[in-house]
Image (cartoon, rainbow, N blue to C red):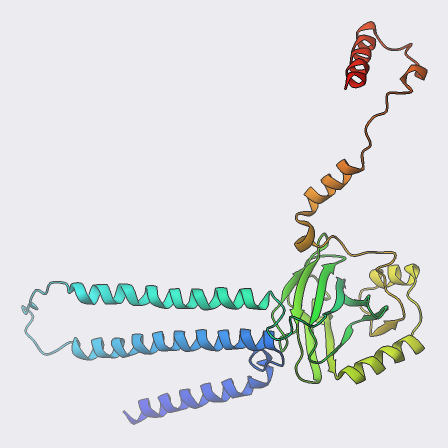
Length: 329
């Protein structure tokens, strides 16, 4: 009995030590912005709900083992026949439905909330940053500031930031755990991610979708600064960084691993971002509409000057009939 208690105590202590040793890496539960706070609260609520379910299950498990354990009865003993209890069956059917319904409502509300500009920041003009991935790096374009960075991005605190995500290669996933959840970046469309940093500091960003051999190096820093410090940084970049040319950008795309870089212009001028799906609908349909709208109606006014030597009498008749119908309208 003593050995069992020691073994149980040792197991609990080891579990606590392992849990505490990983706390520094649990940045998801250390939010620094309203989007991450909403998601963190949802995660904690879901964990508590599941812990409650496990607690009830374990209590019932111990109760059943104790109440219906084997006893010193004769081999020919038969337990009394017991009918099912309708109320108990109803209870253990309804309770799981209620739990699933609660988790569903919370998840849907959270999903809708994080897709919008965080509450309290709706009236502010967002800072738009185009975040493009390539093997295996991140390009951040600031059209408002006309600057571009590679593998790091600076943002002002307490201002909504609208990241517009796309990729120059395989599908990647843009993720800054302390500011919000991940969202995919794809090659033929732009997806949007609204984030706000309410605290100054350096936050790790990464690609959370495996995209090849350089996946592990595809990390970047998000530096949240006060508006004054952010403006000073923008000025420093404009004063010291070179201009981004098309040749330099193409070279960057071909280079697999690069360090941090800054430029006084963006690639959006010569390599614009793909169509924004949220504003224009499906890219294929939009391209078709664009192509169709670019077509001009055929002008038959100069058809008399065309060479009809290779046309049959039937073709000439159809063409004349078509011209007569148009002139009639």
